[in-house]
Image (cartoon, rainbow, N blue to C red):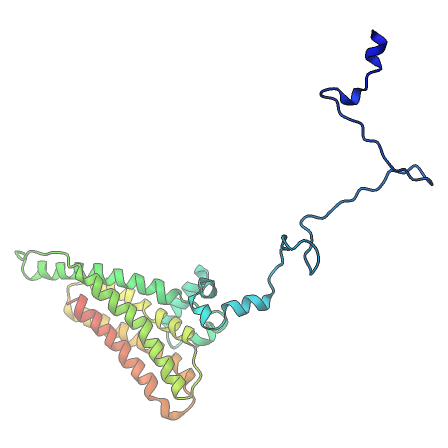
Length: 269
């Protein structure tokens, strides 16, 4: 009985693992056959299984082509380079806008123009003049007639946003097309950067315009307007290549002064 059980073929028993028997052995040596390994996923360079795709790194030329032309205007990645600035660079450029006669601003931003001034300084100025304008109105009413009821004017925010954003975007765009038409070289991003930082002094002046003294308010307004206008005008002369274009910086000076007077008359009067 024991001998019959031991003679049973164990390869057919339940749970047993059949032994792997090599069908062909080398006649010359006793080495095991080499394993046939496949690379996954297979390389599909004209041959192989077309169901697999090989990952390839895009060339630099392809990236440049994808962001060039009009398609790059609607791509967010095209604008990331204009926000590649740190705090030191921003502070240096804002300080330069306060001292227009020191250095050339376009030469400073030539390698790395940014849109920080256009967006964040404009946004800060909108909320500053809207909030401080209401505070100035409150102080004027309390100084003149304390019995007059005062209410926060929400319309200040709408007027500030439409006027500041419109000025910071449309005016540089207009000067860009004007200089292009007159045959002078111009860069739209450089113009947006210049006009954006030119608004920084109005943020500082807005805190001084809260003082309920009309003579001081007009003094601060004219000084800040002249400083901002000089900053734009002196740097704009670098794009003037002929004497018959002197009207361009003169018109920029008038527009900057007009913006300063508009802020004073609408929000701090």
